[in-house]
Amino acid sequence: MNIADERFYRAQITQRIDFAPDLWMFRIRSGGEFKFVPGQYATLGVEGNGKRVERPYSIASSPSEDEVEFFFELVPEGALTPLLHKMQPGDQLLMRKVPKGKFSLDLQNGRTNHLLISTVTGVAPFVSFVRTLAKEWKEGRFDGTHRLFLLNGASRPWEFGYLQELNQFDKELPWFKYVPTVSRPWDHEDWPGEIGRADDILRKYADHWELDASNTIAYICGHPEMIEHSKAILKRRGFTDTGSVKEEVYWIPAK
Ligand SMILES: Cc1cc2nc3c(=O)[nH]c(=O)nc-3n(C[C@H](O)[C@H](O)[C@H](O)COP(=O)(O)OP(=O)(O)OC[C@H]3O[C@@H](n4cnc5c(N)ncnc54)[C@H](O)[C@@H]3O)c2cc1C
Image (cartoon, rainbow, N blue to C red):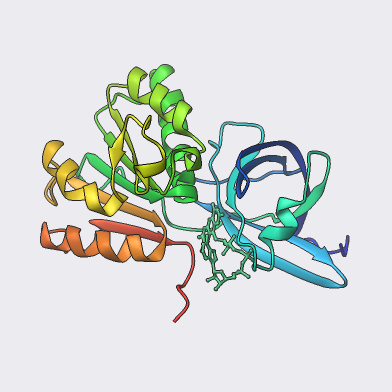
């Protein structure tokens, strides 16, 4: 790296957990101040052969943690993820010093229900939301008047990197509900949970939890098609005004 470039930290990977051959998490130490709001993303990069490749990644950790956590999916033909996938604790990567993004929890809008819809790694910003509020709840700084409802879709059960943690939060926190759902259940007869894509079960759970546009803000994150389908379903339920739906699209689908 060009050490003189003041825009970047040379962050060190401190932990890696592989959830599946193509899904893993890193925790990193930025090596300097990195202030972010839950829901924001960091720009990570790797430099080699005089070229720097950078991509945005949602932050899964809470701002109160002393390390920053990310949940990655390998895109085999991609420019950056094959390089990140080779990295191990002790290795360094580039991280822009300034976090970005507006995909944050809106607690000022008057609506107190927050419907969080995600595919695979798209759960990352929601993990940050829940970790942050769970800590504030335990310390008496959050009174539980805002309620979070998380739908998390994946093809197969092992793709839920945060299943255990989120199930535990669901048990402990009266203001948090978590529903993981699997769209390819046929190889996994032991899967005890919901079946279908996140957007397939959206209507059912919005009815079940009595979430409508008068009392709820929807946040949709991850796969572009899931986001389009979910937005169409929400629109038919009256989520039409600005501020009732927030989205974080992870990539543009190939034409
Ligand atoms: C705000 C924001 C936050 C993001 N957060 C995360 C995150 O937390 N975790 C994460 O893994 N990714 C996240 N992404 C996606 C990430 O920035 C990269 O696009 C992704 O890691 C692929 O990078 P690459 O260089 O390996 O592939 P590229 O060379 O950028 O892409 C190669 C091709 O694959 C497509 N593609 C990109 N990602 C996927 C995918 N997941 N599945 C299928 N096709 C894909 C691209 O559209 C392109 O056609 C986020 C994107 C945005 C905009």
